[in-house]
Amino acid sequence: MLYSVKMRSAQGGAHEEGGRHISGAERILPEEQLDYAVLTMLHRAREHERGRADFISLKVEEIKPQEIVYKPLLSFSTCPVKTAQEGHRAAVAELERAGVKPKAALKGLEMLENLHDSMRGAIVVDCESGMRIDGMGERGVRASKMDCVNSRGYDEYMQARGLTGDHVREALVLASKVAGAEGMVAELCWSDDPYYVTGYVASPLYGYRRIPVMKERGSGIGGRVFFVRPGTDMQKLINYLEEQVVMIQTGEVLTC
Ligand code: WAQ
Ligand code: MG
Image 1 (cartoon, rainbow, N blue to C red):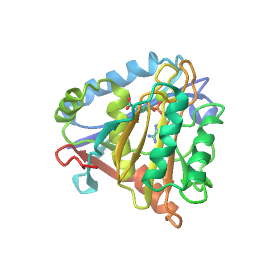
Image 2: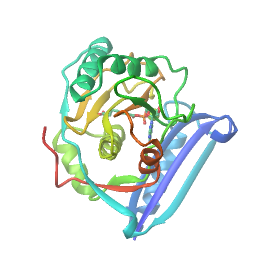
Image 3: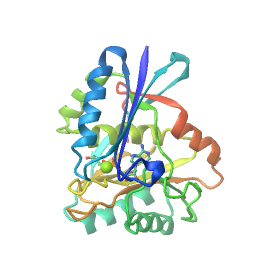
């Protein structure tokens, strides 16, 4: 049997009472790995570079096998950039290549740059008009209930490519779930952790394009934009992203 473990932490009280979001994490694991996962999350919530959490929520739920959908891991490659400015240019180029209209790509980028503080979730944008269409306000849409089928195989896959750490591990799984959504054209992301400056553009067509620098060091502003085709059913999309259990398979790596 598999279990979903979720953690979210905030400062100044719970999120729903106006607390500032510090960190979140989620795994789907077999029972024997639960204890360790819960401890690791607790530790992470209390030692986060965004600040000290005074509210931590941990939720553990059983997952029924029939609820699970399987999707492939996105392919992985890196854009050669050295500054945040080059990073933004590369991101816009990658978004356009994936099918986002130039105006919409720039609008999405601006939405993230203009955030005053992090959202918990993502902004959904129409890939042609560049309009925000999720109607989820400051919370945004959360991709949830995903992990990789074979954690050890996944860690080996990442290590073989010189990739270590939670950020990239989690981002590639999240991006793989997101890219598997109906109507999804591309995702733009960079971290809100002040000293983690790497971001990416991911798409069903070109996979996970890592961009080493997307912001200045020390900036606590980061976020995600999901670009979707016009006419995408939002209710269906939000339901897939937030509720559908998706396990990512490392065996079938997509190629560009
Ligand atoms: N669903 C939707 N949006 C999310 C989620 C989620 N589950 N988790 C975070 N976000 C949004 C939210 O607005 C955060 O402020 C923002 O994304 C950044 O989240 O080396 O660490 O967890 O290749 O800080 C990317 C590069 C790292 C990894 C991304 O994001 C690499 C990262 P963070
Ligand atoms: Mg973060």
